[in-house]
Amino acid sequence: MSKCIICNSETNSLIDSQIRVTHSHCDNCGFIYKDKEFHLSLDIEYENYKMHNNSFESEGYVQIFVNLLNDYIKPLNINGKILEFGSGPGPVLKELLLREGYDVFDFDPFFNKNMDYLKHKYQLITSTEVVEHFVEPLKEFEHLSGLLAKDGYLLLMTRLRTMDTNEFLNWWYRRDLTHISFYTLKTFEEIGKKYGLKIVKTNNVNIIIFQKI
Image (tube, rainbow, N blue to C red):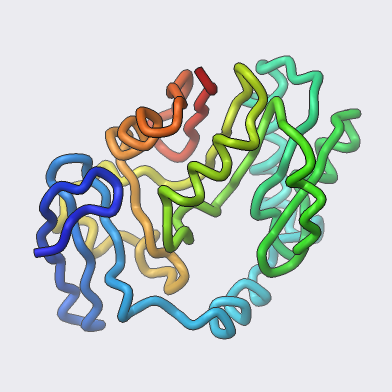
């Protein structure tokens, strides 16, 4: 058995016999991680992302971010800088935020590698449909926490794993070949303890908001 890369507890193996992929599951924090031998190469991962229809041409995709803006971002009363981390090939959320008058930077390791974002601290960092792709989650969360201003917010959009491990093996969200890391609310609580982040809001489905403490 291997150790959980989040909380260092023992893990057990989950085997998908249909496609012969294995994951490591932590009984303590609930984190599930696709074993490294099944990770895609960066080139193949990039090709997968290019096929996503993440642009203003997709009305349904845009509406997701309109709802996110109205229901979760505006109530935070942000008046400082915002970072859209992992903005993808078409930074829809960034554009919506700019239209509302926010001061927004964006970064994406595949599509926008401008490192100027490191020069600032942010009152809000958004990362939508990104953290499930993290190969080294703790390293990434430490990085994001370090970019937050005092009392700043980190808003994540990712599907929380709420089902048992048997149901997980049939979960549509797991079928995306680029998805590596699967979190429960307890997983995020463990991460928060490590990096001074407190969960202040969640819909228990796919939205988690941390505040730096």
